[in-house]
Length: 470
Image 1: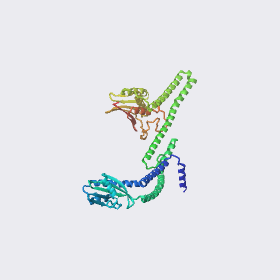
Image 2: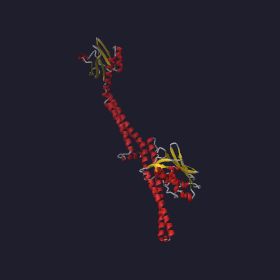
Image 3: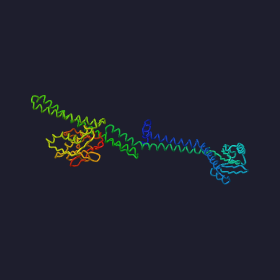
Image 4: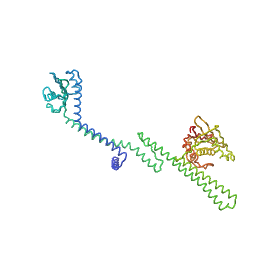
């Protein structure tokens, strides 16, 4: 009982609110009322009009059949009269045929000669009459027509009184209306509840998500396909938002770390030069060189952030030009010659005899430089980095491979993310900022190049494809 009272209170409290449950409930009730009104209108109010129209139509059809009959006889007349449930009289050439059905036919052979006489003398081909049948005290519809030179047909049917019929139908409709309205209220409530409950749950979970609560669960139990699709879409959006939020936190933490370290060192060595080594040329120059190196590292980080922001903004304009790809790679490898000389890195470059493409020189240079730099940081103890350009039928495939321990398969899809690390701890690279692969991804995407990565415990290969049609 308390539960019912609470439900009533809820409906009263929410009566003025545009809730989905209220809308569905009111719609179902309104639809039921509309159907009932429609039935009342056509079954009660318009019943007499429809009935008269129906009988008139039957008379017209009978007249059409009589005109098409080639030889008029009693059997033909009787057949038409029985099928249409009407009365037919044929008069002419001293011939009189009458068929009488159970509708109370008006017999022209014995009475009401005035109608017959008036029509025969009028010279008309057809005429409708409405008469009151004196025998049955009801209205009779008459369709008089001329079939031949001296042959006339008089078709008639009586309209049965509908007063008692309408009274019975009205009483039945009163009970039917009450039952239908009660059922509409009950069934409408349960249907509206079933439809609105999962949407209400999804709405509540969406509010949690809007407040930053990523534990929101949009798996609303429902048999409705669209609601399940909405729940799946919101769950996917939740995962992406959580991923974005995690990346944002990592980015802020890592950028802060990378900014803090060089700034701290610049300040420390600047103070050392000012207070201690300013008079010692050798020490002063050593400290100043460290300040310059840290400034360069800081500049590199800022430039990478700006490059990433520019490429991901969608506003980057490519400057397409003819490029000798082999020469471009050789120039990049030369930049790492100091590593080959001092730390014995080995850069192995294989390529076709000639590779000419069209691309943005600066951006493509940045892609290959970052991929080689990434391979340097993660290659194995042999310190080998492989750069391969392979020519296929309609494209060139550029591969940069290291000999490191590889990347776990479940982590490959995350390596293009900013500052992603498998151990979730920021590790400062020797020759980069942690944004390199994100920049590579953005540049390759605006060039519409296919790209990817293959990895095993013997090394990782990054690759991208350049169409010869570009």
